Image 1 (cartoon, rainbow over the protein chains, first blue to last red):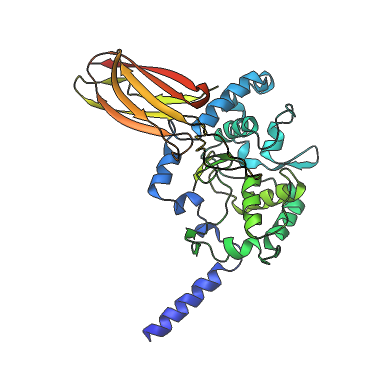
Image 2: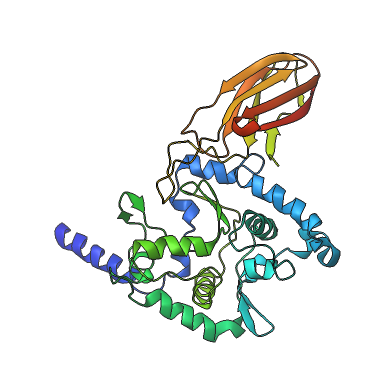
Length: 240
Length: 106
């Protein structure tokens, strides 16, 4: 009898994991981290991402962002929580929008990451809300997430929807909510973008890589943000 | 430009043990890694951090390869008198950074 109950509860667990994660079960990657890594993220004075925030604050003045937008603490509040968004009919990520008047900032450059982290920081603790008008593009990102690809024939959803919380080579599989980008990743020893994280995952799947800022990546980012709707932003987060 | 951050309590009681946290932005390249073409990437690390309290050295650390990038170092000292703590990092390729912090001892 007891044995039957175990099997039944295992089945229930398997069923409840299939498909999109219900909002009550959504967990930020923060909750899967060790106490030490959490302490790094929680340290707002001497955490590693502080170095990028200070650079970003300096760039905000130096590049003239303040000329139009004034004090970022007021004008950028909540902005990161609604990106990627449609700008003049085109879907753009936060990084792309941040460099709209400073095209000299190369994508993935330290300067762009610092400025993006500084902008994203102003929305820390706010809930992710994506514009409903982006739905057709979000559906494309959703297709990407559920499409088997690469030499291993894997879909993102097989790990992050169906098997989160389990182990992959000793690491806990997170739910893939982009709540803290740009992130300081211990593996990178630096701050990086969500596109860089995508390339890490796709390399592991031995799938085709896309350039940072490519429509495929921005649509995937849009879907993940939509999938994490209502969760609180923690940018810039620390991840192992 | 070297970016460094220190965290020192603004006020402390005389004789109190205070915690000091220091963060230095640095890649801490070990000197053991190679490029994709097989060339050795030269070592580029912070070599030392010295902390003086009103001119008296209270803490010194030597850094070595394989320490993480952007090293955070925490140490303690005794709040003796009001004054200034000065921090100086030095490293390979002429790396140098200084930071000061004031403390008021009641």
